[in-house]
Image (cartoon, rainbow, N blue to C red; front, side, top):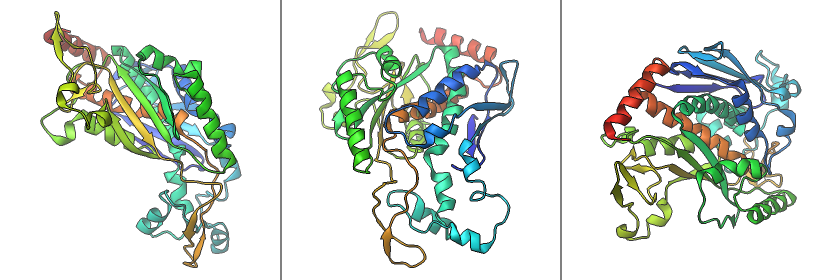
Length: 386
């Protein structure tokens, strides 16, 4: 079973990723990983942290001579900002007087702050802030860069684009995967397919920055060349749409996930929603309202998922809260933060979608070494006539 774990605090010394279950023989390019990390770092609405960090991924184990070994892969991302937080984030004990002097006691509405201190019995919100931070998504993207390179062996590709920021929505009605794939190159700041809409989105972000507010929005993620039959209809936890929703909802700020035309379909007649099936040497569909998944199983069409991000919880004009010590009304703490995560949220969503698809591929076609998996995959495609 493929899984990955991340460790590290936002202002700690480093982020660490351990991937368990990757097969042997997958070629790994450090340049590919660096490109994925760069996508997460650039984009309108980012905060000052992105000017500090370089997010270079160091492969610590599990890869030799450019190929995976089948053993756990460990990755490390150094936090360059740690030098400014070394005492605050010290591993060794500190005096009670110092700990109290730096304690964060004003939880932010919308963040994990209050629920976290209540759950674990902390008196310092810093203990929650550091792990609940979106900084952890750098580790997710690093892991996703490994999964994507496995999927490329089967011509499975991912791409994403920005659909909406605030109340500014793209009006592109028809576009291809190649269009989506090009969105980063054409407009790395916003990654919207419509140039005028991208300009309006950027202006909306600038207005939010001036108002010391934040904005959310919608990202759409595509996965193409995914074979028929990943996932299962036989039990709830094996349905691949459920797995995708869980993985994407694990991203900080994500509050909803839509597969295919799920929202629009809910108000339509079934006769105008479901994708008619045709046959010409193999089965196919002319429409993809289902977003590539039917009954918890991939159907061979592109997987299309929309990911809804709430506005970031840290406001430079903070909302009201309650001081943990005095129990009296106060204003929430202010942490260095982005104004809008949406343009950079796409690559994080791609990473989590790539994890789910990679896990499903290994479950269906084997998991020891790449040549055996490819043999099993080709045999399966021949059996179903694809």
